[in-house]
Image (cartoon, rainbow, N blue to C red; front, side, top):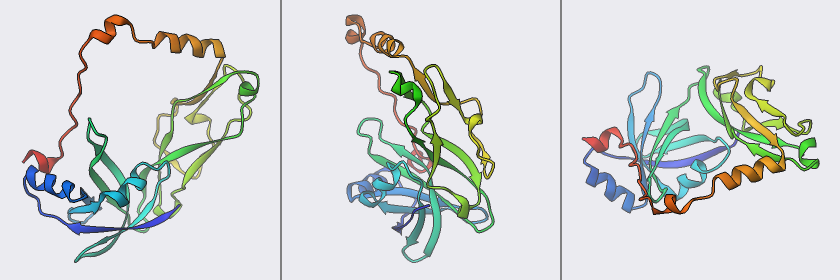
Length: 215
């Protein structure tokens, strides 16, 4: 898998206002945690973090923390602002040699299905699969051959040959379906917004606060 370097600085566990000021300066509050290690409260540059968060690939990160040293980790979770979609918090999971880790890996579709050549349409429902493996075995992506799929066919997690990993995603989860063009048009028509729906006020759900922001 791809390996990158990211700089980080230690931060104090303070008020929400302190975290807001960090974000205004271009930093994202973060937490680094690992088995048998104390949690480290950090901040990392947003402009360097964004390409890693919004990439379809999973990166092995060498996190250089000022005054502490280097920690090898992956991005485990992140939080987005519910209005702006800006990154407001990220969790880094530290990796140790010989210790397995659970990680989400992108599903990469390979080939053109028979059903698409016959006029069908791809519905790609599952874009990542969670697996458990050693840090040295984390793949950049999981290639899935879809050339044999016909109209009406579906491919599920349990159909994949991933014997080298322990798959944590529900085996019955659907990765891809080849649907007839008529069905796709019917679904699109059903999703059209009616005048009554347009008149209803929009309710925006607030994002979950991090533990330190609630204090």
